Amino acid sequence: MDPFVQPSTTDLNDHDENDAAQSTSSTTSLGARLEKALLIGICVLGIFFNVLTFLKHKAARRRRSSATRVSLSLLRVMAGADSACLVVMLFTLGMGQMGWRSNHLLGTLMCKANLFIVHSASAFSLYCWLVLSAVRYVAVFSPLNHMRLNREPITAVVLLAIIIGVSESWLLIDVQYDAVNGACVTAHDDDLDQTIQITEIVLTYFVPLAIITICDCKVI
Image 1 (cartoon, rainbow, N blue to C red):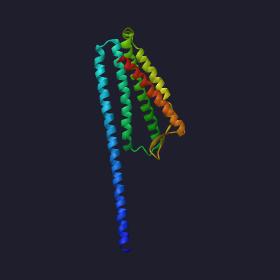
Image 2: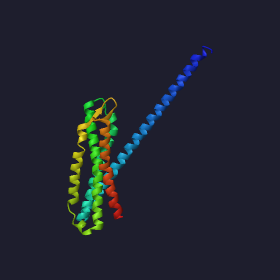
Image 3: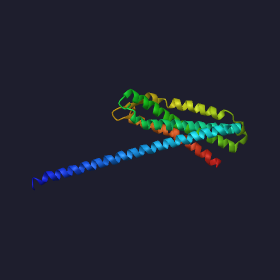
Image 4: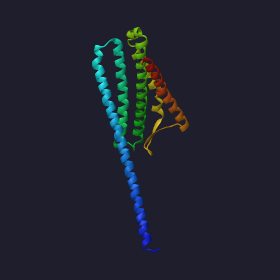
C-alpha cells in the first residue's frame, strides 16, 4: 500500500466520523429543544384554560343555587391545583437558564419544593375530581340530599388537602439534589424507592380514577 495514501484515508475516515458525531449531537439537541418547547406550550395553554375556567365559574357562581355553587367551587379548586402543578413544571423547565445547577443547597431546595408541589397538587386535583363526581352521583340518585349539601364537599376537600400534604411530606425530607448528574434523587435504595412510587401511583391515581369512572358511568 502506498504510504502516502494511508494517512489520507485515515484522515477522511476520522473526518466522516466527526461529521456523523456532530450530526447526531445536533439532531439530539434539536429534538431536546423541540420537546422542551412542546412541554412549555402545553403548560402555558393549561394555565390559560384553567384561569378562564376559574374566572368563568366565579362570575356564574352568584346566580346559582347553593348545591351548584358548591360544585363550581370544587371546579375552581381543581383548576387552581392544576395551575399550581403546571406553574411549577413551567418553572422547572426554565430553571436550567438560571445558573443554579452548580449550587447544591439551592438545587436541593428546588428539588424538594418542586416535587412536593407537583405530587401534592396533581393528587389533590384528582381527588377534587373524585369529590365532584360523588356530588354529581348524589345529584342524580338522591336529589333531595344534593339540595341539602352546604359545606360538606368543601370540608371533604380540606381534609383531603391535609391528608395529601402530610402523606407527601416525605419528599421534603428525603429528596436531595445530585449536582453531578443535575437530577433530583432520593436518599433510600432503589427497591424501596420503586415500592414507594408504585404505592403512591396506586393511591393517588388508580384508586381515585377507578371510583370516578364507576360514579360517572352510573350517572351516564
